[in-house]
Amino acid sequence: MNEESYSLLDLLFPSVSGIAIRAVDTEVEVVRVEACCTPSGAACPGCGGWTERVHSSYLRFPSDLPSGGRRVVLSLRVRRFACADTSCPRRTFAEQVPGLTRRHGQTTERLRSAMGTIGLALAGRAGARLAGHMGITTSRTTLLRRVMERPDPPATTPRAVGVDDFALRRGHVYGTVVIDAETNRVLDLLPERDTETLVPWLARHPQIEVICRDRSGAYADASTTAAPQAKQVADRFHLWQNLAKAAEKTVATHRSCLRDLPPAMPVSEPEWETPIEPDQEDDGPSGKFAERARAHHTLVHDLLGQGMGLREIARHLGWGRHTVQRYARATLWQDMVKGEKRPRVSKLDPFKGYLELRWAETNGRVTVLTLHRELAERGFRGSYSTVCEWVRRALPAVDGVSLAPAPPSIRKVTGWLARHPATLDQEEQQARKAVLARCPELEKAAALISSFAEMLTTLDGDRLPEWITDAMRAGLPGISTFAVGLESDFEAVTAGLTTHWNSGPVEGAVNRIKMLKRQMFGRAGFDLLRKRVLLA
Image (tube, rainbow, N blue to C red; front, side, top):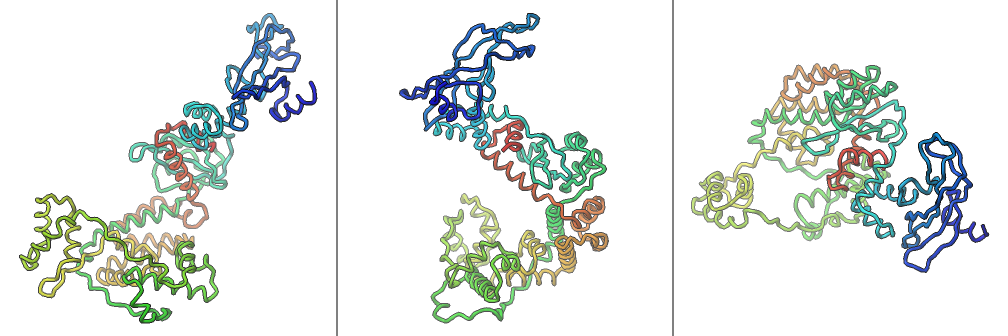
C-alpha cells in the first residue's frame, strides 16, 4: 500500500482497521470508494474457529456518510471463507469489518449511527428533511427504526428518585416517569400510572432511600409496598396546589359573602410616588394600566437608587427578572405604555343598537335577563354575563343610580387569599380587606393559608401538627378536608416541609416529554417515546 492510500485511509476511515483503499472515483455525481479487506483470515461466527480458506469473493456497496453534500458509496470487496471445522453447521461465511459493516447491512455503521442521532433529535419527518439537505437518502420510518435499534442506556443505582405521571393521551391514557432526583436524569418510563406498574420497578432497586412523589395514592401504596426502606417525600408544589383547590372550595361555599361588597375607596398616592407634572399628566396615557405602570416604574427606580440589583429587586417584589429589567431600562414610565388597545370584536356588536333602543324605550326598567332572552331569539349566541357586563358599562344609569357592580369571581377571590399580600396592587388589597371584613370564615381561611405558606417556604414542618389541628377545628369546607388528607399522609408531608427534596426536576422531565410528543405530532407510540426520552 502506497503513501497516498494510507493518507486516504486516515482521511476516510480514521477509526476503522482491516481495510485498504484501492481507488476513489469523484468524476460522477456519487463518490465511489473502492476498498478491500486486508486480514489473512477470519473467525467463523458459528464455532469461532479461525480459517484462511477463501471460498469466493463478491462486492458490497454500503452507503457511507456524505461528503460535501454528495452521496458516498463504498465498493467493498469481501471474501467468503470456508469453515475449517467439519462439525460446524456453517459451511461458509462472509467476513465483516468491525465498525464498518454488519450482516445484511446496506449502510456503514457510522451512517447508521448518524441516522439514529438525527432521529433522536428530530424524529421522523423533520429528521428526514434534514437528512435530505445533508445528502443522506432515507425515509422517516428508517430513521425511527434506527432510533429503536439503539440499546437503552446502562442501568444505574439511584439513591433518590422522583416519580410523577405524564399524559400519553390526555384524559384517557397516562404513564409514569421515574428520574434520578440527584442527577435529574430520566431512568425509565412506565406505560401505566398505577401501583401494579411501579411496584416491580421499585422492587428491582432496593438501594433507593428517598422517593419524591405527588399526593397520588397509587404512588404512595407502591412505595410502601416495594420500597418500605425509602423515605417518601410529598412535593411542596403539589401541596400548595392541593391547598389552593381546597381554598377555592371554601370560597365557593361562602360565595354569598361576595355580593354587595362596599365600593373600593380611592387610595392616596404612596409616599415614594414621584409627582407628575401637569403637562405630562395631560399628555400621557391614562387608565388602570397606566397608573400601575407609573407606580411600578417609580418603585423599581427607587429600589435601584438604594443600590439594589435587578435580581435582588425581582426577589424582593416577587416579579420576573425580565419584568424588572424592562422597568429599569425605561427612562420614563410612559415608555412602558404602548398606547390604548384596540377594541376587541364581540359577538354582541351587531345587537348593541337594539339594546340601546330597548333601554331607552323602557327607561332602563328592563332586566338584563329579559334582554338576553330577546337577543337569543334574534340569533345571539353569547352568554348572559357578556350582556350584563356591557349593559353595566355602556348604558346610562337609571334615575342616577347605577347598577350594582358584579361580585368578584370565586377564582379571583381565591387568588387574593393564596397570593402574598405584597404582590397585590392597591385595588386588590382593598377588595381583599372588604371580603375578609364581610366574612369571618374567609378571614380564618386567609390566616390558615398564610400560615401554611410561611411553613412551606421556610421548611418549618415541625409546625404541621399544630396547623392541622387549627384547620380541622376551623370547620371550613375544603381546607378542613385538606387537613384530614395531610394527617393520613403525615410522614411524607412532614418530609416535604422539612427537607430539600422536591419534584421540580420531575416536572421538567414531564415538560420535555410533552415537547417530544408535540414534535412527533402526538402520534408516537409508548416504545418510541420511551426510547427518545431515555437517549435524547
